[in-house]
Image 1 (cartoon, helix red, strand yellow):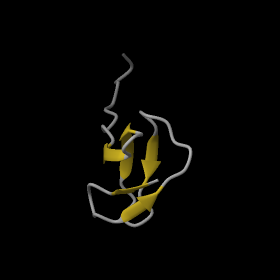
Image 2 (cartoon, rainbow, N blue to C red):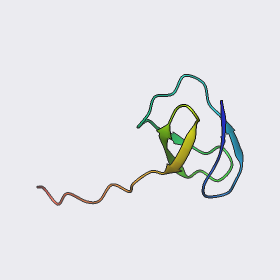
Image 3 (cartoon, helix red, strand yellow):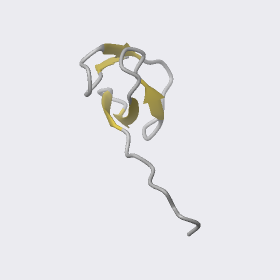
Image 4 (cartoon, rainbow, N blue to C red):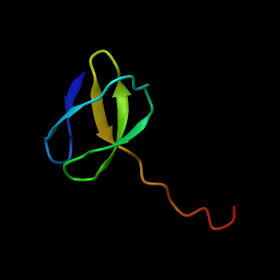
Length: 54
């Protein structure tokens, strides 16, 4: 399966991924979340904020 990176538009080929999984773009290094499998769609992964001990 292939999809375009939403950050740099590079074509990324992924095999055996699950919805919600976070992958890294090999071109720009952005962390991407698998939004859907069929068709494969990628979005920028949400940034984890500091929990400040909560």
